[in-house]
Image: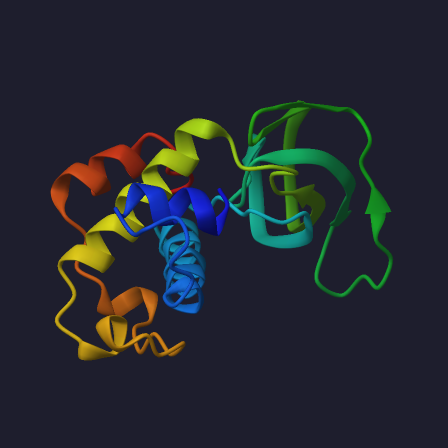
Length: 173
């Protein structure tokens, strides 16, 4: 979503760039709120999750979308200093299906997650959130044209219709 497209959605004149910094900040804030509420990431990143006292044949990964598994290592007991690679698995969405039930003291999963480009359906949720923050803000900072947006994700009370739109993307909650 470009700033010009957001301007149009917010009913700001196409040639009025005076609010661009604020709009960009709100869009960045909307992505942070979305990530905090869904565990979806918008940039490719390498994630390592450590599971203690692991006994299962499935691993539910907490950040999505998962692009690939880099490695799965396990330690039989906590006194061991040797990690052993585990290679017999299948990845489906954000779940790793192991070929057998594992029972280990520690399991480390390293994977790459994140969108290369934001899907249109998620972008619409982000636009709704930007529109809500723009329309129903109680801070004069937005309206003054300042580039500072004083909110952090925890400060924004998300309306029910936006929460419900985000809920279908939620992972691991």
